[in-house]
Length: 512
Image (cartoon, rainbow, N blue to C red; front, side):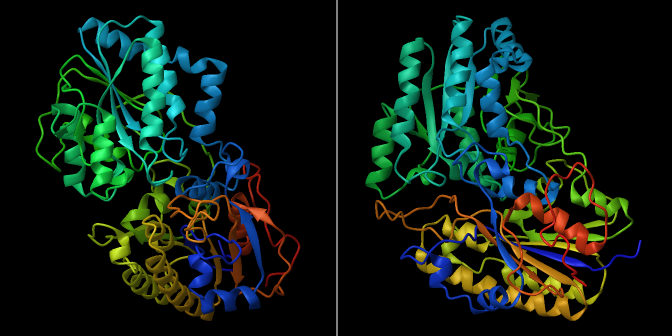
């Protein structure tokens, strides 16, 4: 088909909007290009958290949620909300996968291992889901051992609250008379997604073979890390109860977000796994809270919501070409999550993944791989190959997660430069550029109530700037992330399907 206008969607990951403050890296960076684009083009604010994106009220948005809403054009009821409702209704306690795991362990005289991120951060997991799972096994009077293998947070929660969550879990363990906290380690090890396999191996060896530093209890392990200046996210693999995973055991992964659960899950399940040396454990039962990837050989506790018509599928079905490009930290988001949480590549959907830098923390290299992303994308734009392009700049989010304000300011300044390079090139060829974000983070690096470093996401809205249309500035209505896909379709001249409940932000304005 002949489209009205080609569209480039630029997602500045983790760049929200908030008043000027001593912790607002976005304002402190003085991004002159973004400010100029905002002041001279149609713009608005988009809701990117809570019920507007399918999360419970006052729950912060995140990259997975953001890209699902951006790509689907509708509010996607997120895993957290669906699992919570399942527990509240009692449906969770009738899960076939829970029952099958229980019977597997009983039949083979095995133990149960519950692994995952223990926090109330609500991005990858929630402590209440651990408690509900423990309740299930206690109701069946399970006589063998239930071991908890805990990843500590400090990223989507304050950096020093691990003991609070462990104490809460221990309270329920004591009440039920079932369960032991066997191992703990920071999420850096148990939840790597950047193919830093030595980290994943440390978590795997900790859980499977009990390899780690030995402590008498989790309080001792946490205090030892704090004494060395190590916060929750980076707690070294620690053994509290010496145990191993053996044939006949059942494993339940509590994380409900796929990208940081896949690597460790693969090590348990993939017979052809070659990323580090390990012996595949036979006859184990492995269940995940949700489906981490289509066709992944794990049992599923809570089925996923299916998105039938994400914008990528619509563009492809109209015979148009599209490109998804980012560095590896956000590559699943511009592909899997933007496509509605489905592991599918549509016809004429090209993908480019640029490796993220191999550094301990991204404040060591706040520019990350933005230069390579931009250079490659500029070449593709000049080749005039695509009708729709999605690019993600990971810098604002990934650097802000370190809590380093100066590095976060640098990260904003880096993307400010490269965004303008893309805007100038793409609009010079007659295209339209939408600059937005998926959630807030970099604008809120200091908790103004406590004065402490804030490494979490925020509840703040995100900006949207529309460049390359004939619409006069300052006319766009407020919206939410689900309104972006309908806006793209209108710009391209493609009909919006009824499955998309969002509304185009340009409405009846003449954009051409």
